[in-house]
Image 1 (tube, chains in turn purple, brown):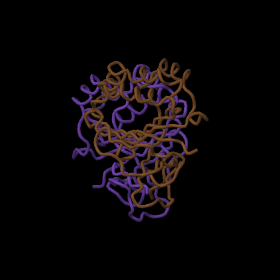
Image 2 (spheres, chains in turn green, cyan):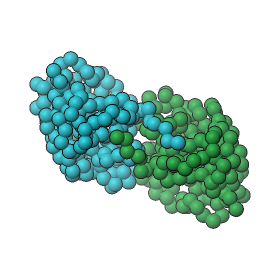
Image 3 (cartoon, chains in turn orange, green):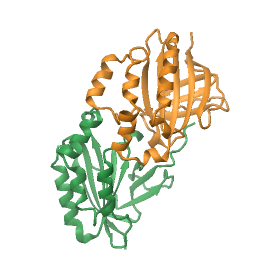
Length: 187
Length: 187
């Protein structure tokens, strides 16, 4: 009786896939089990992966905090994923606390942007770090968000700088689990 | 590899369940197929229902528009579902248009409350019409929301008045499918 969700995107840590896992670090809370590659499948995956492989699923959803003015600025600088020079990437699953989700919309927005400058800080990096947010909280998984980034290996320091800046914010006080999976695109 | 969503609530139009279907009307777009009863199951349902039964699934999620001030007022007047005198109910699945979902958060909030007074209008009825919003858009179903209302049969006119008021709003210009299923609790 349960129909499959056609919006699902599966991120699979296994022994194959277009991205090699260069490192996997538990930033907060439990990490992810060892895998050599990350595979990405549109829709639920029924392929047999080896024992120990993990699958995290999410969907691309509507904007939750961004205003029209902010979106116009972001769109001007953003580049599509999949640029030929994007040979590096990062996959960062995040779960926020129950306290975060109990906040009202205005309270979350204030912490997200007015206090933490999540959009303003990220915007500075957009011309060379492309990203896609995936939502998973309503899907009942282990994480609330699966965030995805692509950039050229020459910009890894800037990517680390962006992560460092965000992790110091008030918003991040509500992050209770975060794993940083650094990736290198298969040659 | 796909794990079940523990947050899922299934609404099943079939031949049994705690609520009798008094009427089912397509307010906009396609209706739902005929059923005599509505069953509600926490989690995915694996029970065999007769051919023609329909299942709609959703989850209870975080607030998307309500501010702290609004929530405080709403909470003061709200009553829990399941009051003994609530012998009537309504189940109203709704899908909004792609144009709605392409709006930014500030644009949706403005239409939702400043223009359409969704919260302010609903608040007037809260002391005798209890409700629960369920989200289904990220689950990839036919509807974006499954809305649920309970009240006493003596208040059905007020419930209809509330629906009438909301359906005249600017927000409702973005509703592209809506079915109103009126219910009577089994004696």
